[in-house]
Amino acid sequence: MKTAGIIAEYNPLHNGHKYHIESTRKETGADYVIVAMSGNFVQRGAPAMTDKFSRAKSALMAGADLVVQIPPYYSLSSAEFFAKGGVSTLINTGVCEYLSFGSESGNIDDLKKVAKVLAEEPAKFKTALKKYLKAGDPFPGARMKALIDCYPDMANLHELLATPNNILGIEYLKYLIKTDSHMKPVTFKRVGAGYNDPYFPGQPGISSKAIREAVSYGSDITTLKDYMTEESFKSLKDSVKKNLTVTEDDFSQMLIYKLLSERNQGYTKYTDVSEDLSDRIVNNLDKFTGFSDFCNLLKTRNITYTRVSRTLFHILLNMTEESYSSVEYTGVCPYIRVLGFRKEAEALLSEMKTKAVVPIITGYNDAAKSLYDEPMKQLMRESAIEDLYFSVQTLKSKIKSKPDMSRPLIVL
Image 1 (tube, rainbow, N blue to C red):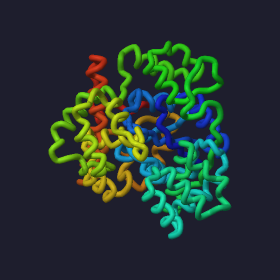
Image 2 (cartoon, rainbow, N blue to C red):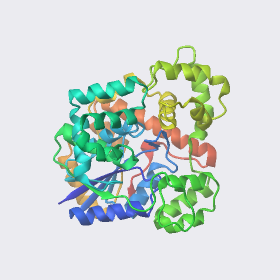
Image 3 (cartoon, helix red, strand yellow):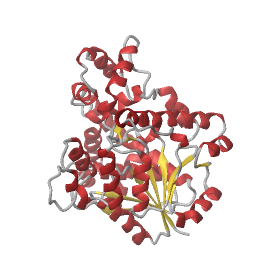
Image 4 (cartoon, rainbow, N blue to C red):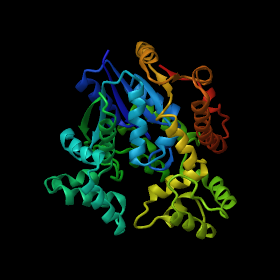
């Protein structure tokens, strides 16, 4: 039984994602493809447009055999920690032989060269990185300059650190190197629309970002049909019709209440919130008009919109440094939460239950039987985070929803 793993968000899933799943199976000869997918909150510091169960179903319909969740403490984090959560989840299944990802480069050897330097962090590289950070360069730019300074022969590879899929791919490879994992990485060159390319009808491809923007701008979503799988488009269309789509601005009232209630003590206890950023938040509370507007107000040359958004969600969702330390203490992803699987993949799920290095959780009863004190507390904290998302859907749509841990698996 040969199994390949993919790390994804599918926010939402489009034809390019389906192509990646199919190509992974073909290139690796895998009998099964497992997807480790973000839950209701994603790496760019935002809620997913549609919920994790509808996205898991779309993934299964697009060819995945089993979908497991990346815990929110990792899915709502920097590229490094997102990669750590995704790769460790796949490693912990005990069955993944391959890690497959898309990249702008498409050259696994070039990506490995950069990843090796960043994983090992030689002294000269660390010194150069500190120099550029001290000079005020944002971290991505400082890292790129330090790499070129220390390794002139890699100057032609510096652009690998300037594009989103390459950056994530390098972080995946870093974690494989650091853990000495047996998983073999393979990459596929991203073709068609780039991550940041705008949408216009008739173009050959489309990104998830462009789909989200088309929905948020109130565009006629029927123009998106040709770019998405049948199930993903149906799910998106249904969510738009029922007012189930979610954006960061749907959390505006919750956020301003949280910020006002804690402004006297500041926000530095929350992950990624520096003293300077905490002060900026406090000093600008009187200008708060909504979540996204506040992010735009707080961002600076050195602090991106995405980082600001992530930190605000860390505050809102009570993701403190202490709680992150607790998560790290229990081991990265001390359980695997299954969101759905195909009936034809029952043999894969059975093998996982035998070979996985952590408990496999399909519902609350599994958790109660399998998890000891701290991992159970972690699961309940993370489930509460997911439930906040579902509560926003309920408030918007007026459609009652079940709690996260009470929702049935997606089985096709």
